[in-house]
Length: 144
Image (cartoon, rainbow, N blue to C red; front, top):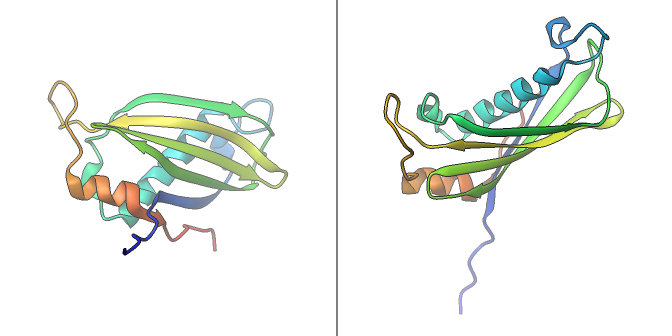
């Protein structure tokens, strides 16, 4: 009997620097920066998978984050995003943001597949579902 190769859901890591606009009056990163970094990782992942056509078709339906460590202007941060589950029309990600002191934030983000200017969600096309559930780790996007 022939064994199938193990398939791993898609994932990616990106690096960014904490920009001045990412900080708040206290001098450390503003909570909204984490959402931007998670979305930047999602964009990198979709580009790596050849799924850029999904931009504008996957509205957010859920976002949550836990903040653990402060990040400061100029810090290098690494955001790791992975596909956790692909439903009929939903897509669930988990993410972690790491800074110089280790884990700084973690959370989840969910999107749905929907055509622009229409009501309701649509099922994922089979090739998209395969890419999301089987593509494994993608080439990271790192700061040079």
